[in-house]
Image 1: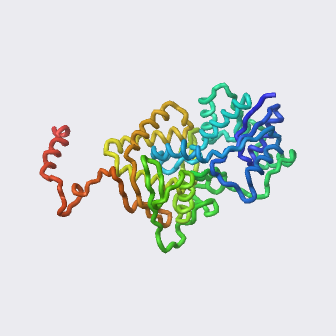
Image 2: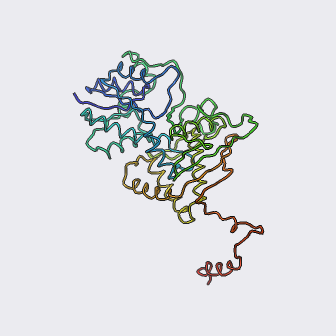
Image 3: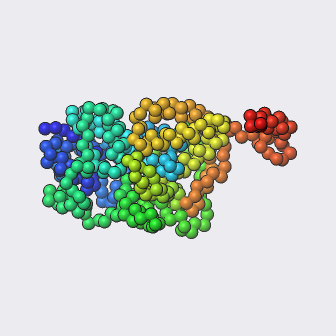
Length: 393
């Protein structure tokens, strides 16, 4: 019997996939990645494991990958200032190559012939998982049941689950498609598909409505060392804990919401809303610190690299040679990205209030218009003549 390793979430689709694959003659091994997604009320990873076994899985792997996720995937993207199309902080996209890595690892351990997933044929995640697996082990077969099976609706899947006694909670209505991890939440479908409708409040999970009256702003200080966030308000945190803390603080002040009509890799546009309080705060702080310590040419060129980096992550090319080469460049830029950024959080906004770094390139005596001014303005005339010389005819 052929073995297949399935990326298993515990939801309706992947639970039906377990049974469907067994009916196709496969021995199904499930893999559940804990990326800090949080679970629903009354849910647990033990319950997810029991559901997979009840659906027909022969074995279930559950791995807590939160530390590896934030250190090896989130942090490089943060250093690169990678934001897709100016709004998407790549939470889901960053998780997929890590899942692909462990799908391949478990397949090797179990001597499996194939990898399976529950992604649809119109989404980005199918590409991210399949390309990632293909780069890591091109010999593994890829099975995508949702692209091939007979079910045409969620209702048909529910009937299938009931028929085979798969323990799925089908009473709770979930109008949105949600993917969550510690770095952020991606939300689509339902009323969000109507571009003329504002996202309803019930679509958001961890951020409060920014229009709610808050009397005072919140100030926080984030300290970076060589591009790595280390402290909040002088207190040292592990990266995973630091992100969790900023998610809580930012969520209370409505920070981190975005509404984006984005260009999917498969060629269609989709409307997604995102929640990423910690990611938003850290990206703003990191970029403000870079503005202070990077010279003009390096800062401007890094903008180009950031754009390309975000596209590679979004398009599932985490393990590509180009992405590896860009990492080397990005890491070189972080040598002097150390210092503290004070941020003001208020009614959904996050802005820099103060900046401090021992590597700062800002010189007050050159910028000031006060009596401390040491800038020799007489030099400007010659500079302008030389600068403009190529354009005079």
